[in-house]
Length: 219
Image 1 (cartoon, rainbow, N blue to C red):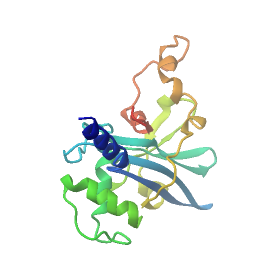
Image 2: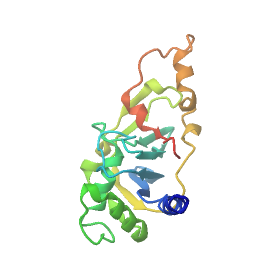
Image 3: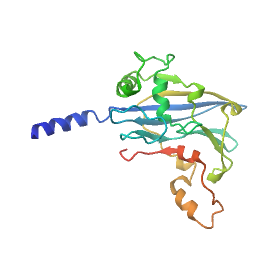
Image 4: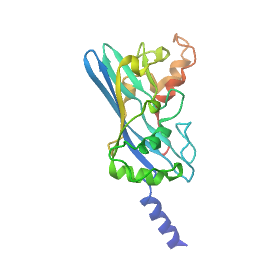
């Protein structure tokens, strides 16, 4: 029994990274002042035999996404954020396996992967580090804040209206991006911000706020 337990422990340690994929989302925006870009490295994780769940940031089986929204500084105090979710609330968690199956992926993977084959797809993509130009239906939701110091001022942004050139996903082994709270100083103490009776903001936050950052307990 002791030998079996030791062997199992070694296997678990060896597979600790299996079922994880790290990637950089980059947003390119054409502006009168030239091309503006921003990027953020995220990591999708899934543990267990079930297929990827499309409607949650932190799904069942110990999976989900860690990372934070892409920030693109357009100048003049305006910053665009590409969230960890789509316009319909779908998580970037579901976009990743779809993008890995794009025929136009560069370089393409060896075959089309089915939803329950996520581990094999992630392993192959980790080695190949492909680049995907996201299709419009897979774009994350874009938002901005009229006042970066006021979470209530969040509003959705149309990619065409601001001149989004393209959004890419590049598999990478770079560290997950952190530091969004330096731009949005209320993000780390949002509960206290809302509870403060002297604060003029008393309404409920738009759902978009939930897509600014995601952290899993096993990080």
